[in-house]
Image (cartoon, rainbow, N blue to C red; front, side, top):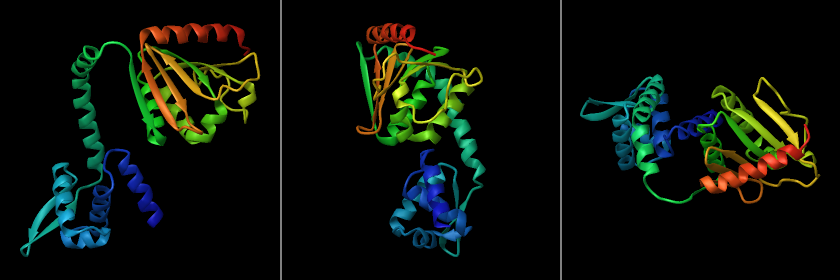
Length: 249
């Protein structure tokens, strides 16, 4: 049961319900109608903290407060409300995005550098790549690094999402870094693979799209970096096309 709770906490964290908020919500789900003190004891937090968490979760529509025998009781809402909340936020964000993009493009001039650290940072970079305006992405992938971290499961998820958003990937890899016969050229998975003419490992992963270059250095340094610069991206595209011509299918 503890392992299931840990998995659920991790899942809730991925949608922004983190730490004690997640523990309080899960405790409310488990206990049904319960007093704030009972929930606090169940999930190992102080009563003062529990009242604060109850207010936040109530504002999010995840729990309801009831007064019973002079005490505040909490009832968790049906978990389906989480999906409805996400849909509402997606709709609101979709409506707001044009204005946000306008502010973003009118802000800082010159190149932009965004550094993302750790596993969550690398996942953010992968998700950002899928927002590309271009239908075709160019990539130079270090398979040894990527299979080590973020790992095969995360990469498989990225492929599924990429196919869903109809992004084709032209990818260059080094044969010396191929640790398994996976993810070759595939029309179904919208991927064309070529291998570098030398045996030198790539050691780092690069995606090129729109006016951005995304870099993932995972095994040793564990970070993702997005460089937004039309000039730098153009240079990288030129180098990619030159290497593409020299590489073998």
